[in-house]
Every structure is written in C-alpha cells, then in structure tokens.
Length: 468
Image 1 (cartoon, rainbow, N blue to C red):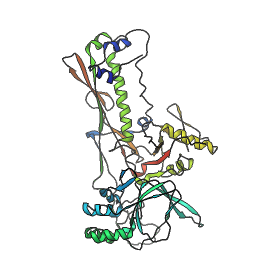
Image 2 (image 1 turned 120 degrees about the vertical axis):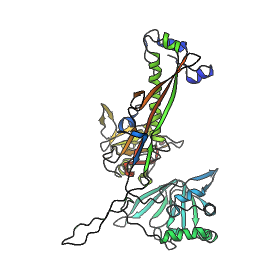
Image 3 (image 1 turned 60 degrees about the vertical axis):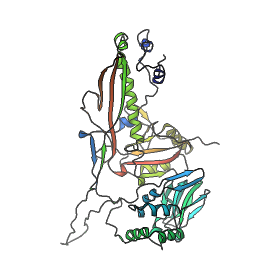
Image 4 (image 1 turned 60 degrees about the horizontal axis):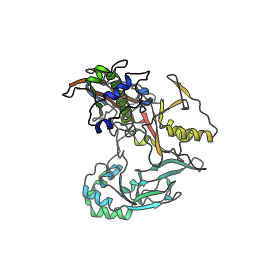
C-alpha cells in the first residue's frame, strides 16, 4: 500500500489527503494504515502520571546549598579549544561572580594541553598548582584503599573540572591522583597565571577573598540544610532547637505541549468512509506521532527532559567503554528502590555482550505480559529516543518513580476541553473555501524529578561492536 507523504502533498500544492490516496482504504481486503514510526514507548507506560491542575507543578524541597552544579562549556575551532568566559561561573568558587571583563581575562590565560592515555595529571599529596578543565576525554580519580591498595574512587569527563581549591587556598594539595584513560584535551590555568589574573583584576581577588572567608553553613551529605537531632543522651540535657528550612524558590514545571493541524477534504470524508472512517484513521496516526514526540521530549527536552535534568552528582561514566555489569551495579547503588533502567536498544545489546563475556545470563522479568531484559531484577526498557552519538556512545538512565517514593513522575492534565484522550484534545477549526476541514490536535505533558537521586545516568557508554 502506498500512502502519499506530507512532503509530496505539499509539492503538489495540496493541503489534505488526495482522493487517490483515500481510495486505498475504500476497496479490497485491507489493513488499517500502518506506521513504522510507532514504538513501544516504555517510558510513557512506566511513568506514573500526576494530575496537574492549573498547568504548573511545583516541586518543594528542603533548602539545599547549591554551588557550582553545572558543567563547563567550551568553544572549539578545529583543534583549538577555549573556555567560554561566562561558563567559568559553573566552578563553585566563582559562582555568582558577574564581572565579564575579569572572567574574560581569566579565560584567556588557560592553556590547552593534549595527553595520551595513562598520563598522570595530578598526584596525591603534591601541591595543587593548577586549575584544570576537561574539554574532552575521560580520567580516573585514584585513591588509596584501607590496606594501601590503589582504587578508582571516581571519574571525570567532558565539562568537569578539578583543582578549583587553588582559587582560594594557596597551600592546597591534590586529594587524589588523576590519570587519563583516553586521549584527553585539557585547559589548564597554572598558579602563576592565576596570580597574574588576580593582580590585573582586583575585583576577582576581592570576590575570592570573600568566598574563602565565608563560613560553610551546616549541611548533610546531600547539601541540604541540617536538622539538629540529639540521640544517645541520658538525664535532662538541654536539647538544641531546630527547624526544617525550605527552598524559597522551588522549581516549577509548566506543562509543555505538542500540536498538529490535521486537514481532511470534505469529499474524502463524505465518499471514502466505508469500511474505514478516514477522519478517524488520519486522527489515529496523527495522535501516534504526537505521542512519539511526547516521549522524545520526556527524554531530550532541554527544559524538563530526563537526560538534561539529571543532577551532576548522579552522573557516572563507564569504566572501559561498553556497559559492564560493574557499571550497572554502580548506577544501581546510587539510589534506593530503582524501578527501571532505560537504554537505547544498541546499549542493551552491548550490555548483553559484556554479560556473555563473563558467563552471566541475567533472568528477564515479566512486565505487562512482556518478557523484558533485566539486571538484579530491575527491568531494562528499550528507548530509541535516547541519542547515540557519531562516536557510537550513548547513555543509560536509572530511575525511581512515583510521588510517594520521591521519584520521577510524568505530568499531565485530564479533563481539558474537547478531550479525546487523557491530556489530549481535538478541536474542530472549521471548513475553509477549499472544502478542507481542519482539526487542531494538542497534547499536554511534562516530567519532574522530585529529588536529585531519583534519576541517575551512566554516560559515555560505547555501543559499537569492538573488532577482534
């Protein structure tokens, strides 16, 4: 069956389905119109959907002392790389500094350095003599275990930084050894260049002096304002009073939308409706396309998409490239009650290959009558909306879901005017002078991460099959 595409119709100067195409549904034994772009949409099915009256959903949290929770962005021109001056304010010690000239002067003093895998960039115990920004590559942070053995205590990758303590403490030392694991491009600010920048820009020196002198407010390991609790005491000691401080400017999610205008010629609707209703079939496929766009936005939207809204402390990097059982265990251990993994089908295949190498054969789990691959009993749902880069790398998401568990939730509003399906309405716009009926189809949605550890991401996952 051949269905004329929208692009072909526009080329031919039409705004609706032709009678020739409509004729395909009016004779012979046939199927409903098929659409290759329809996917399983597991994310949409797995998320609990919360009713949002008023179109805005506010996430109230305890007050958190947030400093430098972003990544640094660079401008690349061929093989040359430079830091964007304003991006330096993503570094904790420079958060809130707004002198553009001083930031530009500081950014111009960074030096680009390229390193091969296995290069030691900083060594534990040595004086911290530079501020380092990672433009490209991956590095391991190596510390000492309980018995003196070397252990990997963390990783750094594109956009990360380290050595920022040198901005306010001239006697700081490297807390860990940092070694490259891939070809790496760094932008480095040596201490002598920092001293020159401080001499040239008194405003920067004064700002960093205030940051160094400012007391650190009491907080827990998550950065939240502390709640004073006493335990293990006897007798009648004086108990400290406390209160739970709230964030005065909580995040608000406004419902987003996807829309399309469906056009159907009255002649098609009148004459070619047997045995299949043309308007219904056109509307069914239009709604499917809107639902595909909804799931794509839930993953990739820059405002509320899960990939863009994962807290940096919940992002980790694959140790060796492909997603290994060790990587999945680390991702799983970062939160309680992980309900699901979400991965591109290529990432699931890559994980399966790594399990096969180790002789591991994880049991699948049953979800809604489907056998789904799993790890540690947590289902791994496929999602083709997660992007795969030209370098064949992608991301794997892990999340806890639901309002009661302080997890990830989908947002929508049911009961809207002319509702056709939950949070989706179809409105008749009228018939124009060319006898074409128009319908406005709108779908409203968003997603919210209630607390940072509800969502984690395993980044830089290599999905290409490695050559023997």
